Length: 86
Image (cartoon, rainbow, N blue to C red; front, side):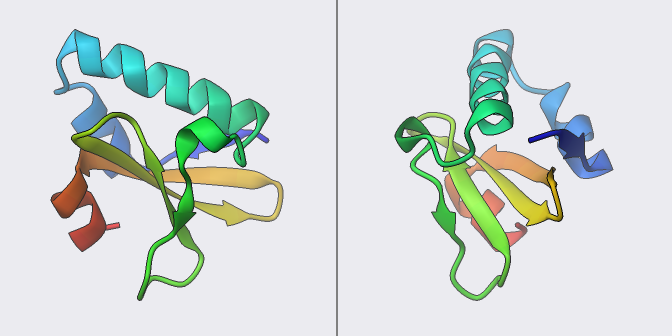
């Protein structure tokens, strides 16, 4: 499924350390090929209909939404901040 990136995601992505960006790139590749891959540990965010969270590592999460046949990548941040502003 094609990915589209929000401005917020791009702005935060470029500020991440290279080691985290490499992990994010792997997550994005999985989302593009199989957004239901169990390694992503994706699930809906309570209180935010239609928005999902995917795990990058113990600290970082990505939020996204499915719209038609596109995944819009919304945010990347530490777990708590990402869920506060999905």
